[in-house]
Image 1 (spheres, rainbow, N blue to C red):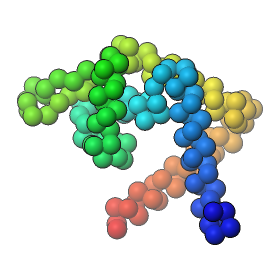
Image 2: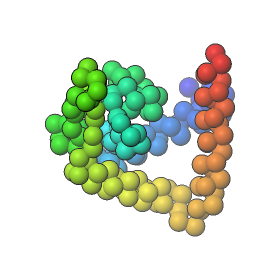
Image 3: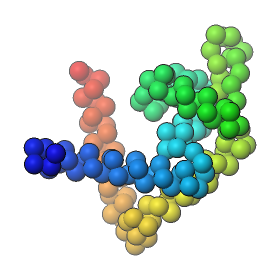
Image 4: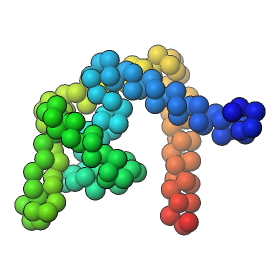
Amino acid sequence: MKKNLPSHLYSMYKLQTLMDRYMDETLKKSCGITRSQYFVLLGITQETVSTQRTIAGLLGVSEVAISKQLTLLEKAGYITKAPMLWDKRSIVISITKKGVSILSIGTKKLETLFEKIFGTNQKNKVLMLDAEMKKMLHILEHFIQKN
């Protein structure tokens, strides 16, 4: 794969694959949840009223893609689902105290992982990398909206 793929494309692919794998392993070991479930829980906390649609939109995935994760999170007691008061067809998704706790543990474990990977003395480099990734994300989102 490396020989036919431009270096920057391979680097982005490999970075994403490795980060996904190590985040997944860290969360499974420490919390018993997957990276996808972690981000669904995080997404719920970002919205005033969370529905499957708002969470999917925030995470940039389809509603179908998070449906299974929501079911697993509900069975584990991390979220609850209830009909919306003003629109009974829509379901409001709320994070439970247990969900908040596991999200907090997961966040701490991921922060520790990043410190192990990048080192605690590399904070400025990590912040600069974050700023560059945000710029790239903005460019990509703008491109997608136009096309």
